[in-house]
Each structure stands twice: as structure tokens, then as C-alpha cells.
Length: 121
Image (cartoon, rainbow, N blue to C red; front, side):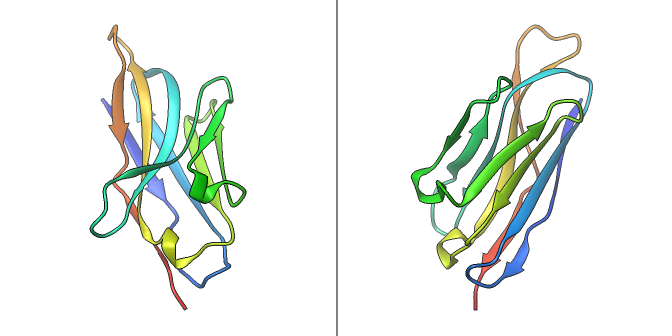
């Protein structure tokens, strides 16, 4: 019914930037919270940033001032601009959307397929 397709990511050197994109498609009536999570090897998945339909944002302390989340409600897309990347940012990044599909009366959480971000010199 609903799919999330991620793009972006890759290998960069410390201090460089990357931009991740996530497009939600399918029978979507509305999307409330959209966010990005990451999972590093041997660690649990953690919230990186999230944004509500009203534009409020929330960031993990470790990325504040470096990462910026944004969304395009008309296109059902969410972005993560990552600046001043460090090796500690290396992880698989997942987008996450809280969706009300057409024909349903409750919301469901959907996940993107994940994209690798590697920061290394």
C-alpha cells in the first residue's frame, strides 16, 4: 500500500556533507511525523531527527547544529542534510513515516530500505 524509497548516502571523508532523500508513495491520505534513524554496527537503531506535519523538529544531541531535517508535504518527501560528518556518523540510515493510508482509520509506521553512510579518511 505504502512504500518508502531512499536515495543518497555513500562514502565521504570527515568534514564533508551528504544529503539523504526519502519519498513516500502509494495510497497515502496523510503523513504526520517523518524522521530519520540510524543503526551502526553492534548498536541499536537510534533516532537522528524527526519533523511533524506542523514543522516542528527534534534532533539527537549528537547531530544538533550539523544535520537538518526538512520535508516537502506536497511531494511526501523528507530530507536529511548532513554537514561536518564524522566517523561516528557511520551507520545505515533509515527513513520513517507515520502514515494514514486511504481507507484506513489508524496510522501505520513505514520504514525505508536503509542506505549506508560511511565517513572515513
